Image (cartoon, rainbow, N blue to C red; front, side):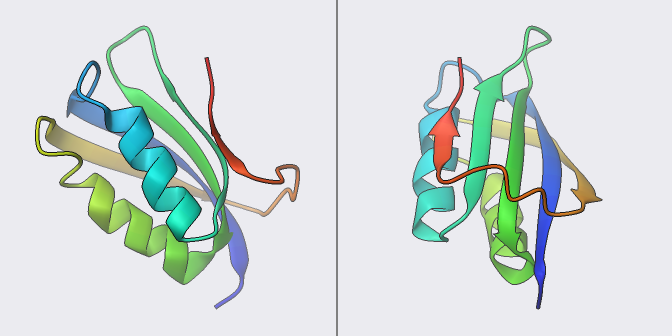
Length: 92
């Protein structure tokens, strides 16, 4: 599969439970680039770029999250690859 981007929003009890670090670890293991951050509305937002199959694997893992999280929904919007990231990072 080709390289693409995905804008992802995760809803539920996902802040204060290590969710961003979980995302960072999984995305890095899958060789994805982009970022993850908490949003003011209590959701976690990600931008992931890389191989579509790898992003789909990340999305599957986000549906469970870390043990202390409770994921209600994972919303994905596929986007063209920008190539603007060299690594995956936790954004402020």
